[in-house]
Image (cartoon, rainbow, N blue to C red; front, side):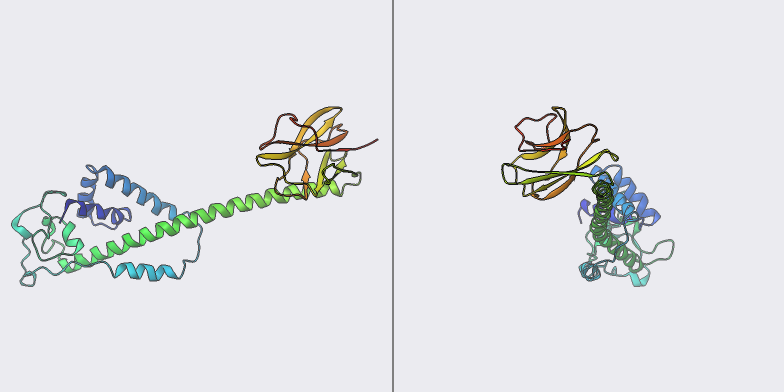
Length: 294
């Protein structure tokens, strides 16, 4: 028996699986053990989060894993002489608290985990008439609960993560759906005008602009991948003053981009190579320019 055995009660405590005496004793221990206090807070928080997690079907291996863990838990052995109605504390000492104050099982033949962490004042028959064997069953149940909490914590963490990922995916899908709707609105606008130009590197750029919607779409075809750490940045040409209209995805040579900002009085769209993240203004010569014409 070592004083550290009491630390194993944190899981059962977090699940509210201790009786009144055990809870009082463990709370007394928590007041003097920062490590146990922190672990208990974390386990209680995890148990609380499980109630907020999205419902998922547990994997088939979960039941097998729980049952496998249960087989490794030893129960408290019957105390010698108990059948005769003994019930005196083991070792003749009366425990007053937890670490170093007389645990039941010290120097006895009972080597079960529950027997090694219960204080001596809980030896023998209790006032409620329960026997050590019955208490052992409850102790085993607490171990099962603690094992389930540990497994559920991992599953719950995964479930919460999956729920968050699903929410992000839905948000992204809604955003993409809105972007495509606006892009399609420009392409199909009654007043849409299309202009194209071939670029020196062999790529081709097309701009579809709608004055009524005050928006434009750039369609790039065969755009070579920009150098590492660089991106293509699009610019509205406002009479010689370049206004940022967004970035292209570096890995895609063919793509349609709904330009940022209003079309306004822009006379064309230019493209430059800029540092990742873009620049407030062009820092290189344009690789292409599409003019709207007269």
